[in-house]
Length: 113
Image (cartoon, rainbow, N blue to C red):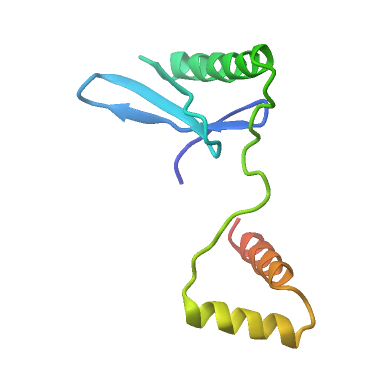
């Protein structure tokens, strides 16, 4: 698994550019494009924290609510057959498709985390 940076509930990627001889990344799981870079891992970590702080300050100055990573809902395209099978399974269990999906994700993450 790729290493991720974490600060104030935000996550950032760690990438390397051999062409530019630097490290760089961006905030993950939000729509806004917030990027940072550094020459060393320590510089990248500092730049990441500064980018998060700057993003939050900019949102505050613009009186906008900052995005939170993973707002709690997402669309999954699974194809007709899997969608139908999942809907039927949920119906047989007398639960919603959302509940079935939530249970399946929870079970998967418990086994593979």
